[in-house]
Image 1 (tube, rainbow, N blue to C red):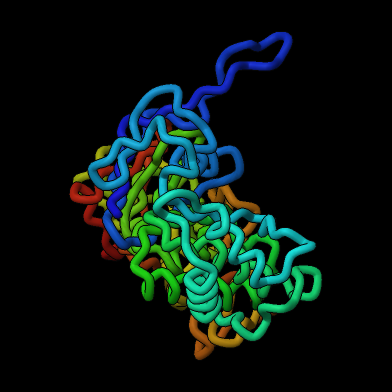
Image 2: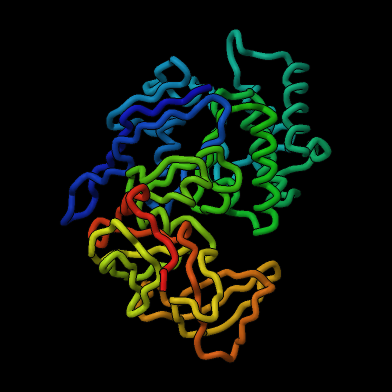
Length: 374
């Protein structure tokens, strides 16, 4: 089911004594979600992602704009008539009911021509339970289940009616790290198996990037960038997106373009032909550093962290906007932890320039960064 959001806006009235201006939670959001895709709504707390999900579900009414499921305008339909499945952060299971009874609950509330026989309901509940691999737990109550099992019950309950659209509101945030990894893989498997259009809300960029077909990065109710996860990571449109995506986060420096060269402090680190002289913010991904004995970027070595598959070199630089600079290098690299300084060359494709005032990325087509010709 294709979902179309058309100029969607949601305002909440101001509540403060001094400031009674409306709070714009979602601001003129337009987006088309293709049929059968999994879309991640991503951003920090308060960015409007959960509000957007609640507008799509019908739990909130938009101030302006329209919502379409396929060719149907569902903007004014109540949630129960939209054909959605909704999974909450806190599972919202009925503690006095068994797993089977929890899954059956949405089917038991169907009325009229949609009403099913007992045998049909049991068959559908069994199918949903098998899909999320909890068919051996049907007689247990939620209190007898682990967090991951409870989340699977919540997903099965949302899927049992085979909704047109599945909405997941931070479904993994209550799970520990290992279980979160396992459950997000299960969500992706289930989504692919059912082909249901799915919208996944999270503040965890790693979750969104790992399972989404496309991600929507939001800030203060405004969409910052939409695209495939790797494309957004490799081509951020502004400094906010660059900072929000990536673990460890991107390293940000205050730099200067002078006579076709990029300077970080006194170090001329890259040639930047065609870019006019100006102050810039420079983003360098942690994997954008290469150890080099005579490299142009000189940093003060603070420590070396061995992470198994690679090494994190922690250092400092006067032009850095971060408290520490983190460079990820291969385990074959030889770094002396006692050395006072460390030198790097930079990988041009992992370096981004942003306008100092607007923090918008300087148009990539006009920037041909390359290693300094010394």
